[in-house]
Length: 147
Image 1: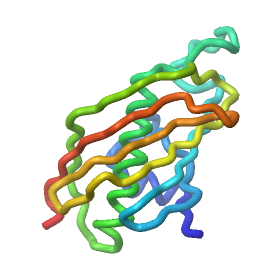
Image 2 (image 1 turned 45 degrees about the vertical axis):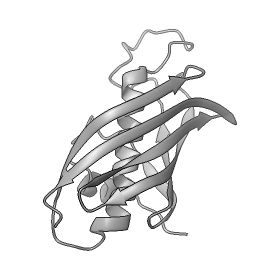
Image 3 (image 1 turned 30 degrees about the horizontal axis):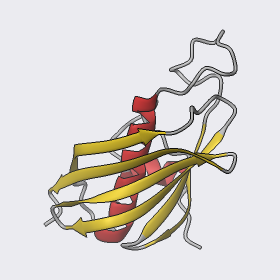
């Protein structure tokens, strides 16, 4: 069961703190799937520190977390151990939000590969917490600097 910790993730993703929205990767299968985890805490920067527990984590940041999870699947599948840092460009996103995500929840981002090419690809991401689907997101992206 391959795993990635936060330090490995921040070395893969082009984002820097506080914009890294993946805490760990529990498992992945190259070219097929990846399961990432994001713990939503009350001290996250989108929360003002005096919010009610039912305040939702912003949906745009859920899309960003889904995109990061998709790029991690791309990385472990296509980039692997190459000493390159490709540039990623997010294209079209399709999202359906089913239930809000509140702080105190640990979300799972289950990524399924649609197609991964040297120049980009797409992936479906299901965001869930507490055994409930929270969102379904499809991410299309392009990659430069791999070939």
